[in-house]
Amino acid sequence: MYDEVNKHEAKMSAFFLHAEEIYKVHNYIEICESALSKLKGKKQKLEEQNKLKPHSVKEIDFVTIDKRIKTEKKLIKSYIKLRSIQQIELEKMIDEQERELIQHQNDDNDT
Image (cartoon, rainbow, N blue to C red; front, top):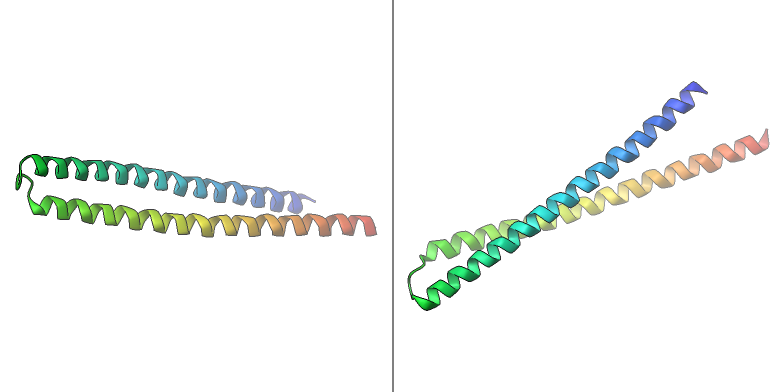
C-alpha cells in the first residue's frame, strides 16, 4: 500500500512538473512576442525617420533589426513546437494514469 501511495505521489509530482514546464515555455513565447513587437515598432520608427530625412538611418541598422526580427520569429516557432510536444506528452501521461486507475478499479471489483 505504501509503495502505491509513493507511486501515486511521484506521478502527481511529475504531472505538476510537466505542466510547470509547459507554463514556462508559454511565458517564453510571450516574452519573444513582446520583443518582436518592440522590434517591429523600432523598425517602423527608423523607416519613418528615413522618409523624413533620407539616408539618415544607416542600412546596417535595418539589417540588424531584420536579423533580430527573424531570430525572434524562429524562437517563437521553436517554442510553439516545444509546447505542443510537451502538451502531447502530458496528455499521454494523463491517459496512462486513467488506464491504471480503471485497471485498479477492475482489479478491486474482481476481488
